[in-house]
Length: 391
Image (cartoon, rainbow, N blue to C red; front, side):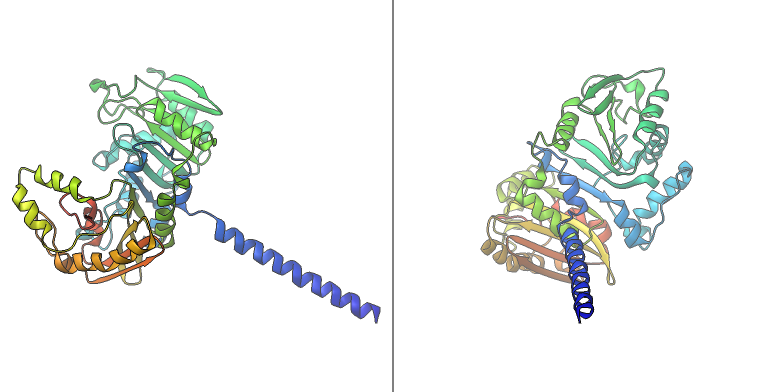
Protein backbone atom coordinates (compact mmCIF):
# COMPACT_ATOMS: atom_id res chain seq x y z
CA UNK A 1 0.00 0.00 0.00
CA UNK A 2 2.76 2.39 0.98
CA UNK A 3 4.66 1.53 -2.22
CA UNK A 4 1.58 2.36 -4.32
CA UNK A 5 1.21 5.72 -2.57
CA UNK A 6 4.87 6.53 -3.13
CA UNK A 7 4.48 5.71 -6.83
CA UNK A 8 1.47 8.02 -7.06
CA UNK A 9 3.36 10.78 -5.26
CA UNK A 10 6.35 10.32 -7.53
CA UNK A 11 4.13 10.45 -10.63
CA UNK A 12 2.40 13.56 -9.28
CA UNK A 13 5.74 15.28 -8.67
CA UNK A 14 6.94 14.37 -12.17
CA UNK A 15 3.77 15.83 -13.73
CA UNK A 16 4.12 19.00 -11.63
CA UNK A 17 7.78 19.32 -12.65
CA UNK A 18 6.93 18.94 -16.34
CA UNK A 19 4.17 21.56 -16.06
CA UNK A 20 6.55 23.96 -14.34
CA UNK A 21 9.16 23.50 -17.08
CA UNK A 22 6.55 23.98 -19.82
CA UNK A 23 5.15 27.07 -18.12
CA UNK A 24 8.63 28.46 -17.66
CA UNK A 25 9.45 27.93 -21.33
CA UNK A 26 6.17 29.45 -22.46
CA UNK A 27 6.68 32.46 -20.21
CA UNK A 28 10.21 32.85 -21.50
CA UNK A 29 9.03 32.75 -25.12
CA UNK A 30 6.24 35.21 -24.39
CA UNK A 31 8.55 37.69 -22.70
CA UNK A 32 11.49 37.41 -25.10
CA UNK A 33 11.75 40.67 -27.05
CA UNK A 34 11.69 40.56 -30.83
CA UNK A 35 14.51 41.73 -33.07
CA UNK A 36 13.21 45.28 -33.41
CA UNK A 37 12.70 45.60 -29.66
CA UNK A 38 16.24 44.33 -29.08
CA UNK A 39 17.67 46.98 -31.37
CA UNK A 40 15.53 49.71 -29.79
CA UNK A 41 17.03 48.73 -26.44
CA UNK A 42 20.47 49.98 -27.51
CA UNK A 43 19.27 53.21 -29.16
CA UNK A 44 19.50 56.22 -26.82
CA UNK A 45 16.27 58.06 -26.11
CA UNK A 46 17.70 61.31 -27.42
CA UNK A 47 16.60 64.07 -29.75
CA UNK A 48 16.67 63.12 -33.47
CA UNK A 49 17.19 59.40 -32.84
CA UNK A 50 13.47 58.81 -33.19
CA UNK A 51 13.36 60.64 -36.53
CA UNK A 52 14.50 57.55 -38.41
CA UNK A 53 15.04 54.00 -37.26
CA UNK A 54 15.50 51.86 -40.36
CA UNK A 55 16.27 48.16 -39.99
CA UNK A 56 16.79 45.29 -42.43
CA UNK A 57 16.24 41.88 -40.86
CA UNK A 58 18.39 39.74 -43.15
CA UNK A 59 17.77 36.63 -41.07
CA UNK A 60 14.03 37.04 -41.67
CA UNK A 61 14.59 37.80 -45.36
CA UNK A 62 16.63 34.61 -45.72
CA UNK A 63 13.80 32.65 -44.14
CA UNK A 64 10.93 34.23 -46.06
CA UNK A 65 12.67 34.53 -49.44
CA UNK A 66 14.54 31.19 -49.24
CA UNK A 67 17.94 32.77 -49.86
CA UNK A 68 20.97 31.11 -48.32
CA UNK A 69 23.77 33.20 -46.86
CA UNK A 70 27.24 32.69 -48.35
CA UNK A 71 29.83 30.92 -46.25
CA UNK A 72 32.55 32.80 -44.40
CA UNK A 73 35.06 32.36 -47.24
CA UNK A 74 32.73 33.69 -49.93
CA UNK A 75 34.22 35.97 -52.59
CA UNK A 76 33.04 39.55 -53.12
CA UNK A 77 31.06 38.44 -56.18
CA UNK A 78 29.32 35.71 -54.17
CA UNK A 79 28.47 38.14 -51.37
CA UNK A 80 27.20 40.70 -53.86
CA UNK A 81 24.96 38.10 -55.50
CA UNK A 82 23.59 37.20 -52.08
CA UNK A 83 22.72 40.79 -51.15
CA UNK A 84 21.11 41.42 -54.54
CA UNK A 85 19.00 38.28 -54.14
CA UNK A 86 17.75 39.62 -50.81
CA UNK A 87 16.63 42.82 -52.51
CA UNK A 88 14.73 41.10 -55.29
CA UNK A 89 11.38 39.36 -55.20
CA UNK A 90 9.78 37.68 -58.21
CA UNK A 91 12.04 39.42 -60.68
CA UNK A 92 13.62 42.82 -61.15
CA UNK A 93 10.28 44.53 -61.81
CA UNK A 94 9.28 43.93 -58.18
CA UNK A 95 12.39 45.18 -56.42
CA UNK A 96 12.20 44.72 -52.67
CA UNK A 97 13.26 48.22 -51.56
CA UNK A 98 14.78 48.11 -48.10
CA UNK A 99 14.40 50.71 -45.39
CA UNK A 100 18.00 50.90 -44.27
CA UNK A 101 20.64 51.44 -46.90
CA UNK A 102 23.70 49.26 -46.71
CA UNK A 103 25.30 51.76 -44.42
CA UNK A 104 27.92 50.17 -42.19
CA UNK A 105 30.79 51.32 -44.35
CA UNK A 106 29.73 54.11 -46.65
CA UNK A 107 26.01 54.71 -46.49
CA UNK A 108 24.61 53.72 -49.85
CA UNK A 109 23.57 50.73 -51.92
CA UNK A 110 24.99 52.59 -54.92
CA UNK A 111 28.41 51.73 -53.49
CA UNK A 112 27.66 48.10 -52.66
CA UNK A 113 30.85 46.76 -54.24
CA UNK A 114 33.05 49.09 -52.19
CA UNK A 115 31.04 48.32 -49.06
CA UNK A 116 31.57 44.59 -49.40
CA UNK A 117 35.28 45.00 -50.10
CA UNK A 118 35.68 47.28 -47.08
CA UNK A 119 33.76 44.88 -44.86
CA UNK A 120 35.93 42.01 -46.00
CA UNK A 121 39.01 44.07 -45.11
CA UNK A 122 37.63 44.37 -41.58
CA UNK A 123 36.91 40.67 -41.32
CA UNK A 124 33.13 40.91 -41.58
CA UNK A 125 31.07 39.21 -44.26
CA UNK A 126 27.34 39.24 -44.91
CA UNK A 127 27.30 35.60 -43.87
CA UNK A 128 27.65 36.81 -40.26
CA UNK A 129 25.11 39.66 -40.38
CA UNK A 130 21.56 39.03 -39.15
CA UNK A 131 20.25 42.60 -38.95
CA UNK A 132 21.51 45.96 -40.15
CA UNK A 133 20.15 49.36 -39.36
CA UNK A 134 20.58 53.08 -39.34
CA UNK A 135 19.47 55.34 -36.53
CA UNK A 136 19.00 59.10 -36.39
CA UNK A 137 19.13 61.85 -38.95
CA UNK A 138 22.25 62.36 -41.12
CA UNK A 139 24.95 63.33 -40.58
CA UNK A 140 24.76 62.35 -36.89
CA UNK A 141 23.34 58.89 -37.51
CA UNK A 142 24.66 55.54 -36.32
CA UNK A 143 25.05 52.49 -38.55
CA UNK A 144 24.80 49.21 -36.66
CA UNK A 145 24.90 45.56 -37.49
CA UNK A 146 23.81 42.66 -35.32
CA UNK A 147 25.18 39.19 -35.88
CA UNK A 148 28.02 36.92 -34.84
CA UNK A 149 31.47 38.50 -34.83
CA UNK A 150 35.00 37.75 -33.72
CA UNK A 151 35.54 41.17 -32.18
CA UNK A 152 39.25 40.66 -31.57
CA UNK A 153 39.87 39.57 -35.15
CA UNK A 154 37.79 42.45 -36.54
CA UNK A 155 39.80 44.95 -34.53
CA UNK A 156 43.08 43.39 -35.58
CA UNK A 157 42.28 43.31 -39.30
CA UNK A 158 40.94 46.88 -39.13
CA UNK A 159 44.22 48.19 -37.73
CA UNK A 160 46.39 46.03 -40.01
CA UNK A 161 44.55 47.16 -43.13
CA UNK A 162 45.14 50.79 -42.11
CA UNK A 163 48.77 50.50 -41.03
CA UNK A 164 49.76 53.47 -43.22
CA UNK A 165 46.97 55.55 -41.72
CA UNK A 166 46.81 54.55 -38.05
CA UNK A 167 43.63 55.31 -36.08
CA UNK A 168 43.15 57.16 -32.88
CA UNK A 169 42.40 54.50 -30.27
CA UNK A 170 40.23 55.29 -27.25
CA UNK A 171 38.84 53.12 -24.48
CA UNK A 172 35.27 53.78 -23.42
CA UNK A 173 34.00 51.50 -20.69
CA UNK A 174 34.79 47.98 -21.85
CA UNK A 175 34.86 49.02 -25.51
CA UNK A 176 37.67 50.19 -27.77
CA UNK A 177 36.85 52.95 -30.25
CA UNK A 178 38.91 53.24 -33.43
CA UNK A 179 38.55 56.58 -35.22
CA UNK A 180 39.95 58.50 -38.17
CA UNK A 181 39.83 62.29 -38.81
CA UNK A 182 37.72 64.71 -36.78
CA UNK A 183 33.96 64.57 -36.35
CA UNK A 184 32.31 64.81 -39.78
CA UNK A 185 35.65 65.93 -41.26
CA UNK A 186 36.03 65.39 -45.02
CA UNK A 187 39.10 64.37 -46.98
CA UNK A 188 38.00 63.93 -50.58
CA UNK A 189 41.32 62.35 -51.55
CA UNK A 190 40.45 59.43 -49.24
CA UNK A 191 36.98 58.69 -50.60
CA UNK A 192 36.33 54.93 -50.43
CA UNK A 193 39.81 54.24 -49.07
CA UNK A 194 39.14 50.87 -47.48
CA UNK A 195 38.04 50.08 -44.98
CA UNK A 196 37.41 53.23 -42.96
CA UNK A 197 36.52 56.13 -45.27
CA UNK A 198 33.06 56.56 -46.73
CA UNK A 199 31.85 57.89 -50.07
CA UNK A 200 32.39 61.48 -48.90
CA UNK A 201 35.84 60.85 -47.46
CA UNK A 202 34.67 60.93 -43.83
CA UNK A 203 36.67 58.86 -41.38
CA UNK A 204 34.69 56.38 -39.35
CA UNK A 205 34.50 55.51 -35.66
CA UNK A 206 34.23 51.76 -35.15
CA UNK A 207 33.40 49.51 -32.23
CA UNK A 208 33.26 45.71 -32.44
CA UNK A 209 31.53 43.43 -29.97
CA UNK A 210 30.51 39.78 -29.98
CA UNK A 211 26.96 40.50 -31.19
CA UNK A 212 27.12 44.09 -32.45
CA UNK A 213 29.33 46.33 -34.56
CA UNK A 214 28.86 50.10 -34.84
CA UNK A 215 30.03 52.84 -37.18
CA UNK A 216 29.50 56.59 -36.91
CA UNK A 217 31.10 59.73 -38.34
CA UNK A 218 31.33 61.38 -34.93
CA UNK A 219 32.34 60.13 -31.50
CA UNK A 220 29.49 61.48 -29.32
CA UNK A 221 26.64 59.49 -30.98
CA UNK A 222 28.70 56.31 -30.68
CA UNK A 223 29.41 56.86 -26.98
CA UNK A 224 25.70 57.46 -26.40
CA UNK A 225 24.90 54.03 -27.85
CA UNK A 226 27.57 52.38 -25.72
CA UNK A 227 26.27 54.17 -22.59
CA UNK A 228 22.75 52.97 -23.41
CA UNK A 229 24.02 49.41 -23.64
CA UNK A 230 25.49 49.80 -20.16
CA UNK A 231 22.21 51.16 -18.77
CA UNK A 232 23.58 54.65 -18.17
CA UNK A 233 21.11 56.23 -20.62
CA UNK A 234 17.50 55.29 -21.26
CA UNK A 235 16.67 53.68 -24.58
CA UNK A 236 13.85 54.08 -27.09
CA UNK A 237 12.64 50.65 -25.98
CA UNK A 238 11.18 52.29 -22.84
CA UNK A 239 9.27 54.84 -24.96
CA UNK A 240 5.80 53.33 -25.14
CA UNK A 241 5.05 54.52 -28.66
CA UNK A 242 8.21 52.97 -30.12
CA UNK A 243 7.82 49.83 -28.06
CA UNK A 244 4.32 49.33 -29.44
CA UNK A 245 5.56 49.87 -33.00
CA UNK A 246 8.37 47.35 -32.59
CA UNK A 247 6.13 44.68 -31.07
CA UNK A 248 3.50 45.05 -33.78
CA UNK A 249 6.03 44.93 -36.63
CA UNK A 250 7.72 41.93 -35.03
CA UNK A 251 4.39 40.11 -34.73
CA UNK A 252 4.08 40.21 -38.54
CA UNK A 253 7.69 39.06 -39.04
CA UNK A 254 8.50 42.16 -41.07
CA UNK A 255 11.67 41.85 -43.12
CA UNK A 256 12.46 45.54 -43.33
CA UNK A 257 11.04 48.42 -41.32
CA UNK A 258 11.11 52.15 -40.78
CA UNK A 259 9.96 53.70 -37.50
CA UNK A 260 9.67 57.43 -36.88
CA UNK A 261 8.19 60.09 -34.64
CA UNK A 262 8.25 62.48 -37.62
CA UNK A 263 4.55 62.05 -38.33
CA UNK A 264 2.62 63.43 -41.29
CA UNK A 265 0.80 66.37 -39.74
CA UNK A 266 -1.07 68.69 -42.06
CA UNK A 267 0.93 71.88 -41.41
CA UNK A 268 4.27 70.21 -42.09
CA UNK A 269 3.20 68.50 -45.29
CA UNK A 270 1.30 71.49 -46.58
CA UNK A 271 4.44 73.60 -46.30
CA UNK A 272 6.64 70.84 -47.73
CA UNK A 273 4.45 70.18 -50.75
CA UNK A 274 3.90 73.87 -51.41
CA UNK A 275 7.69 74.36 -51.44
CA UNK A 276 8.02 72.07 -54.44
CA UNK A 277 8.77 73.83 -57.70
CA UNK A 278 6.18 71.54 -59.33
CA UNK A 279 3.28 72.73 -57.20
CA UNK A 280 1.50 75.83 -55.95
CA UNK A 281 -0.35 76.48 -52.72
CA UNK A 282 -3.59 76.13 -54.67
CA UNK A 283 -2.48 72.70 -55.90
CA UNK A 284 -1.89 71.58 -52.34
CA UNK A 285 -5.22 72.93 -51.08
CA UNK A 286 -7.08 71.22 -53.92
CA UNK A 287 -5.28 67.95 -53.25
CA UNK A 288 -6.07 67.99 -49.54
CA UNK A 289 -9.78 68.45 -50.29
CA UNK A 290 -9.97 65.10 -52.09
CA UNK A 291 -10.98 63.18 -49.00
CA UNK A 292 -10.75 63.04 -45.22
CA UNK A 293 -7.60 63.49 -43.16
CA UNK A 294 -6.66 61.19 -40.31
CA UNK A 295 -6.85 62.07 -36.65
CA UNK A 296 -3.44 62.81 -35.00
CA UNK A 297 -1.12 59.97 -34.06
CA UNK A 298 2.24 59.90 -32.26
CA UNK A 299 4.48 57.51 -34.21
CA UNK A 300 4.44 55.72 -37.55
CA UNK A 301 5.93 52.39 -38.57
CA UNK A 302 6.23 50.96 -42.06
CA UNK A 303 7.24 47.43 -42.92
CA UNK A 304 7.23 44.75 -45.56
CA UNK A 305 6.59 41.05 -45.04
CA UNK A 306 5.46 37.98 -46.95
CA UNK A 307 2.86 35.27 -46.52
CA UNK A 308 1.15 32.68 -48.74
CA UNK A 309 -0.51 35.45 -50.77
CA UNK A 310 2.81 37.19 -51.45
CA UNK A 311 4.49 40.40 -50.36
CA UNK A 312 2.47 42.89 -48.36
CA UNK A 313 3.16 46.28 -46.83
CA UNK A 314 2.46 47.31 -43.26
CA UNK A 315 1.39 50.65 -41.86
CA UNK A 316 1.36 50.88 -38.07
CA UNK A 317 0.17 54.02 -36.28
CA UNK A 318 0.33 54.56 -32.53
CA UNK A 319 -2.19 57.02 -31.11
CA UNK A 320 -2.71 58.87 -27.86
CA UNK A 321 -5.77 56.77 -27.01
CA UNK A 322 -7.83 53.80 -28.13
CA UNK A 323 -10.75 55.89 -29.41
CA UNK A 324 -8.61 57.84 -31.90
CA UNK A 325 -7.04 54.63 -33.18
CA UNK A 326 -10.52 53.22 -33.80
CA UNK A 327 -11.66 56.36 -35.64
CA UNK A 328 -8.64 56.24 -37.92
CA UNK A 329 -9.51 52.74 -39.12
CA UNK A 330 -12.45 54.12 -41.12
CA UNK A 331 -10.62 57.34 -42.07
CA UNK A 332 -7.61 55.49 -43.48
CA UNK A 333 -9.89 53.20 -45.47
CA UNK A 334 -11.67 56.26 -46.88
CA UNK A 335 -8.33 57.87 -47.78
CA UNK A 336 -7.41 54.76 -49.74
CA UNK A 337 -10.81 54.70 -51.50
CA UNK A 338 -11.15 58.44 -52.15
CA UNK A 339 -7.68 60.00 -52.49
CA UNK A 340 -4.53 59.71 -54.60
CA UNK A 341 -0.81 60.39 -54.48
CA UNK A 342 0.19 64.02 -54.82
CA UNK A 343 2.37 64.33 -57.93
CA UNK A 344 1.33 61.27 -59.93
CA UNK A 345 -2.34 61.58 -58.88
CA UNK A 346 -2.62 57.79 -58.97
CA UNK A 347 -5.57 56.58 -56.92
CA UNK A 348 -4.55 54.61 -53.84
CA UNK A 349 -7.26 52.05 -54.46
CA UNK A 350 -5.72 51.21 -57.85
CA UNK A 351 -2.44 50.23 -56.18
CA UNK A 352 -3.85 47.64 -53.79
CA UNK A 353 -5.50 44.30 -54.49
CA UNK A 354 -6.32 43.57 -50.86
CA UNK A 355 -6.51 45.88 -47.83
CA UNK A 356 -7.11 45.07 -44.19
CA UNK A 357 -7.21 47.75 -41.47
CA UNK A 358 -7.87 47.19 -37.79
CA UNK A 359 -7.02 48.62 -34.39
CA UNK A 360 -6.22 47.17 -31.00
CA UNK A 361 -5.79 49.52 -28.09
CA UNK A 362 -3.79 52.54 -29.26
CA UNK A 363 -2.39 50.75 -32.31
CA UNK A 364 -3.79 50.80 -35.85
CA UNK A 365 -2.40 48.26 -38.31
CA UNK A 366 -3.00 48.13 -42.06
CA UNK A 367 -1.85 45.32 -44.35
CA UNK A 368 -1.80 46.14 -48.05
CA UNK A 369 -1.18 43.77 -50.96
CA UNK A 370 -0.46 44.87 -54.51
CA UNK A 371 1.69 44.08 -57.56
CA UNK A 372 4.26 46.80 -56.80
CA UNK A 373 4.30 46.64 -53.00
CA UNK A 374 7.94 45.55 -52.96
CA UNK A 375 8.96 48.75 -54.71
CA UNK A 376 6.43 51.18 -53.27
CA UNK A 377 5.94 50.44 -49.57
CA UNK A 378 8.21 53.24 -48.32
CA UNK A 379 6.58 55.84 -50.57
CA UNK A 380 3.55 56.04 -48.29
CA UNK A 381 5.70 58.05 -45.90
CA UNK A 382 7.43 60.26 -48.45
CA UNK A 383 6.49 63.85 -49.18
CA UNK A 384 4.75 63.21 -52.49
CA UNK A 385 2.76 60.25 -51.17
CA UNK A 386 1.13 61.50 -47.95
CA UNK A 387 -1.26 58.62 -47.39
CA UNK A 388 -1.21 58.96 -43.60
CA UNK A 389 -1.48 62.76 -43.40
CA UNK A 390 -3.51 63.96 -40.40
CA UNK A 391 -5.35 67.12 -39.48
